Amino acid sequence: MNNLLDKIIIDIIQKDNRFGMDIDDVILNFEPYFRNGLNDYYETDLKKGDIVLYDVTKILPIKEKTGDIKELYKALKRMGNKIEFTQIPINEGVDDSLRLLLGKKFFNDGNDKFLINTSRSNELYDDAEIKTYENLRFNGFSYDNNIIFDPDKHYVAKAFGAKIFFEDSPTAALRMIEHNIPVVMPAQSWNIKTPRDIIFLDKKDAENKHKLINRLNNYEGTMLFRIRDFVEFGEYLKNVIKTYRLTS
Ligand SMILES: [Mg+2]
Image (cartoon, rainbow, N blue to C red; front, side, top):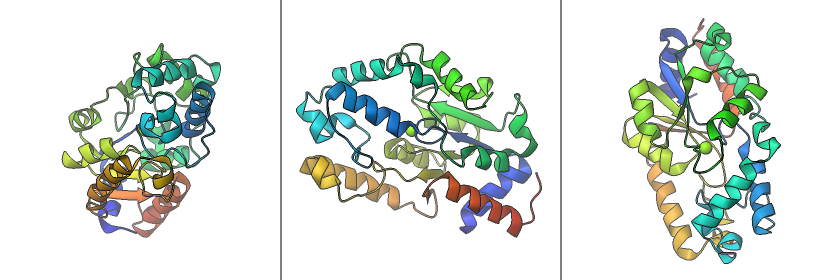
């Protein structure tokens, strides 16, 4: 238990404070789909845990095959045009966690407590918005009104009045924190230091990654709350609800 996070969670459940969530690799288990799509396009053999940087154009096997952002955009378009793009499963434990945070409101289309914000755009995927709605609906969501497509997530979260945001990207998380919005961060190979950093990154990129992680880690426990995954987070929520005898 962490007292600061406990307090934020209590206020979400009892006072209807607002919160926000990113989609890819927070709500959706995007990494396998993304990695397979990269392997398909670049003819690489990236395994789980090999994507050690958010900017994959700097990961060595891809960098060798051009490392060009325009190529990456082509790879993303190809991924986005497959039917499976609208059928990416949600991460285990996300729906339980949302149910615990939102209570009865989870089933209410008009809930205004929870914001989904993604930087997906038509530049990255054709019909990004329609396909994202379809994908969330595929997983039983109906939050059409609360999905914002905007890469400046910290502005959106501020405007919405989110008291916490769930984010996996280290840069987006840092920006959020610098705008005084605490972050819950599920562990991913691009937001932690991993032994594979030195295998998959040039020295400079590995150093930059570690600097960024160090900056983030300075906030750990006060503004940054790392979780292993949503199964663990759901257990934590149940503990908070039990310990403080909360009802929503
Ligand atoms: Mg994400």
